[in-house]
Image (tube, rainbow, N blue to C red; front, side, top):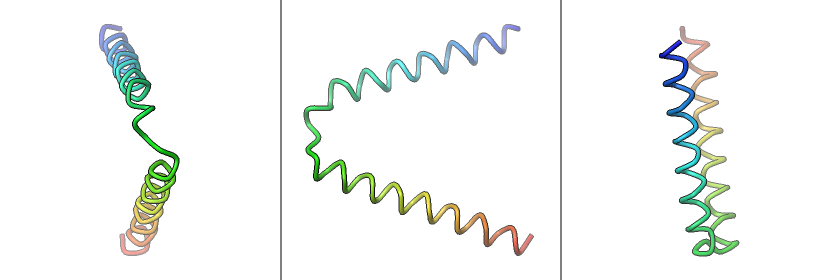
Length: 59
């Protein structure tokens, strides 16, 4: 029970910290920068997916 509670509290604190930092820095990001970041992160996720699919074929 202590382990589950610790994971829950740690996760909740992480998301609270993360959302607070994003809220503070939100005005610093312009729309063009956010679109660029979204495209780069999407490309990285696609690459990880392709690598995972390729590794399934070789395993």
